[in-house]
Amino acid sequence: MTGLFDEGAGDLDSDAFQVKLDNDGVEMSFGAQRDGINGSMRMVSEQQNAAIDLLRLAVNRPRFDQEAVDRIRAQIFCGIIANEGDPETIAQRKWRRAIYGTHLYSRPDEGTKVSLAGITPADLGAFHQATFAPDGLHVAVVGHIDAKTVSDKLDQLFGDLREKQTLSPVADVSAKLGQQVEVNYDLPQTSLRLAFRGFKRSAPDFFPAELMNEILGGSAFTSRLFDEVREKRGLAYGVRSYLVDITSILMRCWLRQRHARTAPPRP
Image (tube, rainbow, N blue to C red):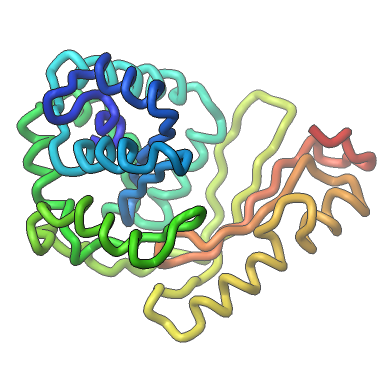
């Protein structure tokens, strides 16, 4: 669905919508993760009204034309096939199954070849109707615009959406930690994933954990982990930590080789 918002909306088919984006100097993108859908738009001040009109069409009246659906489906399908031989993806999928079992979080973000093939334009339209509603919306605006104009524009953008989402809640899950999962692959590079118990967004410690993680391993090239593991010891290409989903803190480390002692040049 998110790959199709800029592939035609309202009276504009895919080509016409893309031409309007280019002519009006508008950048628009959307994405989907396990816990939400996000979108962003960047514009020049002089084209503000035109940009808002295009975003309003994309959010409220996406077309989901069959030709566009088939083309975007094929792109995702190619990515799934390519990832079947990718060590990182193989390890990630096995890791998620071990951590989450049969819970929804164990499923791949992009779906599977079977599930992807079964999606119809009608399915996308129904999911759009169920998902897009002001009660599930969070908006951040920055740049050459004042608060009063933002308020008016938001009413213009989202005022026609149904009032409430109609999604089914996702059940809580207890991550199955305390286990070691290995995937053997005939390559000289090793990737490590370490998972620890995390926090729900509603927990009082969630934002302190976000701050802690940023210092520990969230910022590339400036975190403590990066400084200790790569800069001082040259043991890995890189190392980072994340807060993942609602259940775990994840640390990833890319080892160049088991006993590396000199850091490779920075990319």
